[in-house]
Length: 316
Image (cartoon, one colour):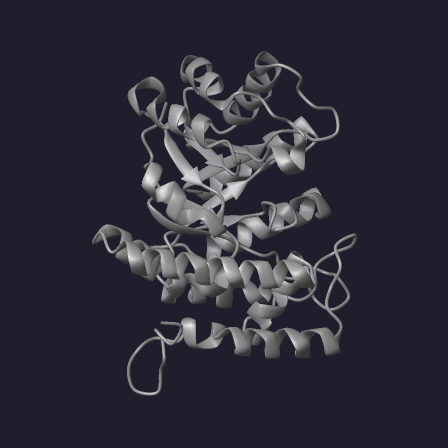
């Protein structure tokens, strides 16, 4: 196992498209600069938020190459999601990620022909990780979308010897008992990245040190204040910031989260374009209503730095 710890906020980035649905890689530089401005630790590219299952293999490879070129020499790490329903494609993406110097790779379980046992899942992950033998590997556990729900504490215990590069899990799972068991598996050897933005405070109280999430793309100031409040034991403000996150994400879900999240980034000057079908996008009137709802919520004040001309703490 590899002792990698991705602390702080890791943004699960959007794949940028043009209006016609073609890749728009020219936007990646602006995305990376925006994340660095907001003190994001790393970009998690080509995952759920990145619409990986809606991309051709060649598009995923182009996306990886672009991100690693843009971030070369910067403090922003890149974790490449390489998971696929096709093992050969996953391995090809892993090979490329290692060659280009990715900080780590990650893979979720295949979701059409599903592994029914831990042994099958371990073999699948071992073959992907083996294609990048010098790069830390994370298994991305998100049973609500993959339909694969296997015991992660047992996965870690068995994978410790089976997958030498295993760094830990990206844990997007509501089972908090298993999360704690995972934290203590193999004497706490694994990095347990928290994957639920709207419950980040819960993860921190259980022992999470790092988190991967889509709303860190456009709402990082909320979560940075949450992390700071938690670190100083200020539970009142930590809970207040978490509730701001809950209100924001609840609002975006009412509009259809993928399309709404991309619309919010566009409002902030990062035009990542529409989501690909079958996900839905907002019409112009819907975008106008969303902006009005965000203004009523106080979102733009929440993400404005404090100081002259900035609100920052307006929701308090």
